[in-house]
Image (tube, rainbow, N blue to C red; front, side, top):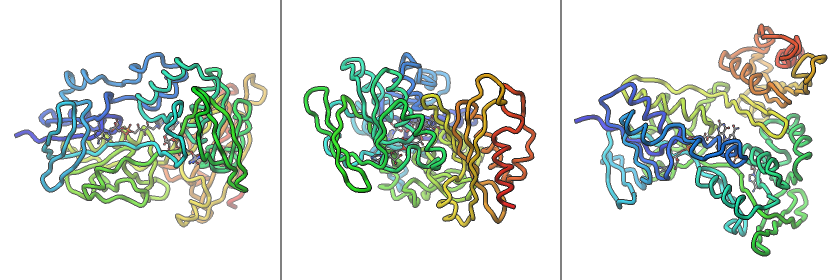
Length: 455
Ligand code: FAD
Ligand code: NAD
């Protein structure tokens, strides 16, 4: 009998695993179960679909179910929700439009992703209140925008999704308000960078930093009152809006794993070994439901990003197909485009967190220019760089600027993989011509200043 590989969750990590397993082992029987009606979709493109940059939601489907079934010989079953894993029997329970069924597996991958956090706010189920996680959410938002034509939106959460969506709503001509619980937008990037983000965002949206939403109350069809309070003194305020987007973070979707007795980490995501195997043999996990190892601290962390999901899914697929492939540690490199800015981060930039991992962090923030100062189109850029005083090793960076940020953060990410000292970063021979950077690229500049501070 053929060995059977079953995948739970048909998006980035799950379908990467299934595809790689098929390439490595044509004999394997591969079944992928996805509870929604969509597989292999680009969640990252959803804000751009709502914004109108992507016309058709189907354009976000990377590989169609037909291609998986016919060309890759992967039995992809949509609208199939796994409701239980029974490790002793090596079976799973499924609910589908055909009813309940049991399926046996030899190897199992849990790639169930994450789900949006719903903060305890009264009235979150009111009409006009949305979250954004999958295609149905995006379609719902788009439908509401088309049908109701709201002129205003209040975004709860100034993190990645909140900021990308604030940009999208603004570009649709809406008046935007953002409520963020912490003192800063994109708080984890560090205050020096966040302050630039806030200066920029204020040109496009009304900000309520350090505020909490307590209640959303529908006044009349299409009009909502939102009751906020300021964290420092609990001062209350009522603001009006026609629509609300909740983007207050995500948590790993680990219900199946937990109920099956699979070990979870401190982050509440699934712990795996270096090949993605969980605490139960023959059950693997990858993507937004699993922890990953940090290249900087060598500790497990929760960093739910797309490349990690794709790459680790692929590694697990390869291992299951018989070619053992370890997972790759992550630097946690991310970039966001908002309004006229690019903002990016990699590694550990929060000094408090760095101390928790035993480092003695030293941080500098420099201001520079994205091109030679005399070159038309040059824009300001700010770079924060953090290193460990004792080893002089680079720990992380955040940047904000008008252009060229996404590729500059990649320089630092590569340096983190090389376990570079700040001196090694400073000595890199980077490309220079006036339309692309000053002679001393801002990254080199920051490294030079940090070196001086490290002594
Ligand atoms: P998911 O994509 O969440 O897929 C999990 C799948 O499992 C889902 O399809 C779900 O329906 C299915 N499932 C869950 N439970 C079951 C069950 N019991 N039975 C069957 N199926 C089940 N990352 C970046 O790096 N850059 C970006 O720009 C970026 N932008 C983003 C924008 C948005 C709006 C969102 C929501 C995310 C964004 N991300 C971005 C994050 C990125 O999309 C995720 O890291 C990635 O999708 C994770 O892939 P995954 O396969 O692990 O999980
Ligand atoms: P997030 O963690 O980036 O941001 C959530 C924000 O909501 C935080 O700033 C948090 O302080 C705030 N918040 C939490 N509770 C709140 C409350 N009650 N009231 C007001 N604010 C509150 O999460 P997200 O924006 O939902 O994004 C989810 C994940 O998707 C991210 O962690 C990221 O991994 C991924 N993502 C990445 C990109 C990218 O790389 N460009 C884009 C979108 C999403």
